[in-house]
Amino acid sequence: MKLALLSDIHANIQAFEACLADARDHGAQQFALLGDLVGYGADPVAVVQRAQQLAEHGALLVKGNHDELAVSPPALVETVGDMTAGWTHAQLSDSQRQFLNRLPLTLQHDAILLVHSSLDDPALWRYIYDERAASASLDAIATLPQVRYVFCGHVHLQALYYSGVGAELMKFLPTPGVAIPVPRHRRWLATIGSVGQPRDRNSRAMYALFDSDTLQLSFQRVVYDHHGAAVAIRQAALPALFADRLELGR
Image 1 (cartoon, rainbow, N blue to C red):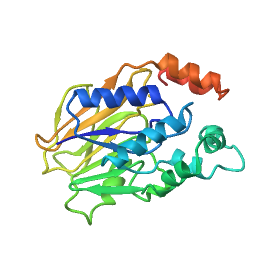
Image 2 (image 1 turned 180 degrees about the vertical axis):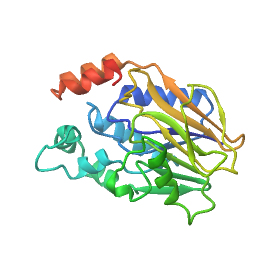
Image 3 (image 1 turned 60 degrees about the vertical axis):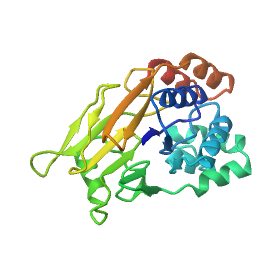
Image 4 (image 1 turned 30 degrees about the vertical axis):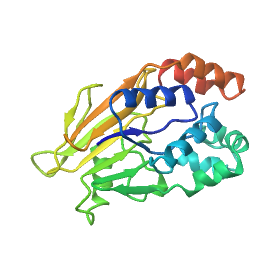
């Protein structure tokens, strides 16, 4: 079974649809959305509607920090992430906000555990940028021996962490489109990157594919209409910073 993993869509319907189509072209049979459906981008309604349709057909979903912000926007704008929360909240319907609010922070599916950020207290939204943070996240599932794969987002970058010859965790930076063997005798943690707002100076959207039959993981990049997504942000009178990020990939 091929599971397509998509995270940090950030109200970018152009990137979302492009990644869904690419995943189906690669044989994806199931989808998992790892949080941050909204925030930054101009199309939260369309993205949430698409996510709801996928959920009705068995997709797996967890909540991200921007989803939480859209449900309960902060009274004061203190961070970059706060800048579109109130606008997004107003765009969404009550039922869409309820949908986001009901999403779990973590979700286990067979040997897979899905989470938006780190597993050591996921409500704190810790980032996994290095081996130390990845190790803390894997330590949090020490009581779940059946879990071999942790998939998360939040950092907008693609990376794979695994236990090396010793006890220390190793970090591997994948090549897009190249399948990586991920046998069950190790524990693996992957940050799958961002569909809607890549930050590695590459405008192509990111997602990943996990094949539970062959035990292979591949990280994908997809060309999409990022200029159109940027124009939509500017037309919605959202901060130009978010449009610039899409065009520059950072």
